[in-house]
Image 1 (cartoon, rainbow, N blue to C red):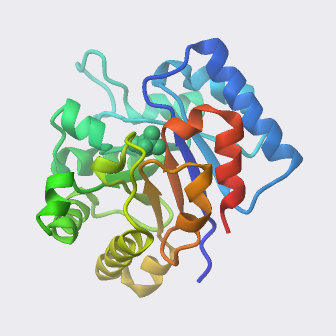
Image 2: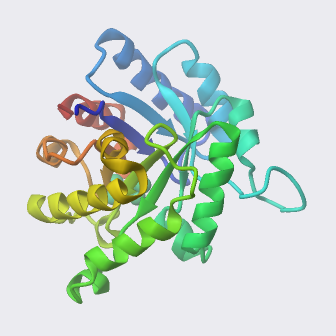
Length: 251
Ligand code: 13P
């Protein structure tokens, strides 16, 4: 089963309008000139989704949010609902990023509700899971990732409306990554769990991204692994050349 890779940039809390639009335009221009063997997505902060979506309209570059609330609307000061993201032109939304889990106390149940809200709106939910360094040192990686997967996936998840991102917390923004066999082991375990939820065929179509210090120098090796179907990139997605080099590394 060949899965088309997804290379997604998570801009986190970076960029003002001018540099965000320029970054998106730079990527879209490369994409049009030289289409890679991958789908490309940028997830700017909520404040820039409108401007970025307008700037890349008509190009194959997709735009996503970094989070959404579980409710469609209502008294939730400062939050953003999935239909609001959709309204601005987003097609995807990241949910359960480890920074949301740690900064905002999001649990698997919260993440599951947010993913369900994304699905109800017609957005693809990119559900993030990953162990801490203490989990890995304690030999609990597969148990923790497995339990986050089970707890964060809503009942209506399909390979079309859901992407999993495996992001070891200790690899995010640190320049450190697991070894290729360690990444392969976790991705294989996630696909095996997915087979129980989605069936073998469903699991074979599910995209499982790797995230955590992915950069041009390690992307080719990581993206060549059997069960790695793309990347969720933080720091290196803020630079057109780096993001493009990663996109071009995908098989
Ligand atoms: P870095 O690529 O900066 O390590 O961030 C990864 C990440 O958290 C993407 O969601």
